[in-house]
Structures are given as structure tokens and as C-alpha cells.
Image (tube, rainbow, N blue to C red):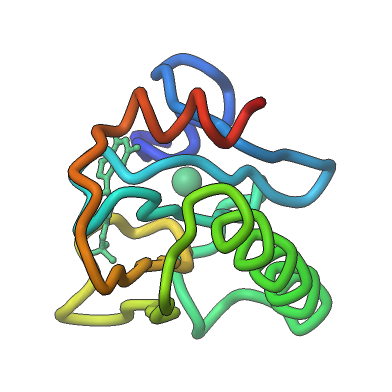
Length: 120
Ligand code: 5GP
Ligand code: ZN
């Protein structure tokens, strides 16, 4: 299947992966809305909220909670929005949850710098 996120899962396309387990992969968005903009995706291909199962969704939410803690501790974010697009607002047709950090003062660090902070 010609899916960019499946290619990221199979490491055919590189990514700044900050966490993975049997069910999910978590990596930094290539065009971050703010430093630390993170995507959580299931390793199995689901298109979006319509076809993903509850067990996987529950796991994704658990990982989101852990990632929020990580981003808060390591990047000193002041807030976070969790967004998951479907239908006409969804560009990549492989389920993904966005974690979009907010800062009272933007620290201006780039994706690679964020990755090095989160991996240490
Ligand atoms: P959506 O489908 O919810 O509109 O957003 C897709 C998101 O995936 C965008 O924020 C975009 O920057 C991100 N994205 C698209 N292609 C890649 C990629 O190859 N690598 C990474 N890390 N992010 C990507
Ligand atoms: Zn896919």
C-alpha cells in the first residue's frame, strides 16, 4: 500500500521517533506547528476514526498521556492541544493523533534539537 505513514513504520522513510511499542509509533511532525509537535500512529494501517478499533484507541490515549508528561518535563510546554483529523480535513489517510504544544514564549528550537532533548 502506498501509505507514507506505513513507510515510516517500516523505516523506509526516516523519522524522529521518540517512542514505539508493538502497537504504536510516536514521532515528530515534519512541519511542526510548534517545537515538539508530535504524531502518534498505530502500526496497523487504519484510515481514521471510522475503522480503528477501541482497544487500539485506548492504547493511543494512554500513550498520549505519557507523551504529554514527557513533553511537559523536557520541553517546558505550557499547554497542549490534541487533534485528530478525519474526512476532508485529513491529509494523510493513516490514523494519526496530533499533540500540538503551546508555549507562553516560543523557544524557537527546530525538529532535530527537539529530538535530541527528548531522547536524552
Ligand atoms: P493531517 O492529515 O492531520 O492534516 O496531518 C498530517 C500531518 O503529517 C501534517 O502535520 C504533516 O506535517 C505530517 N507529515 C506528513 N508527511 C510527513 C512525513 O513524511 N514525516 C513526518 N514526520 N510528518 C509528516
Ligand atoms: Zn498506512
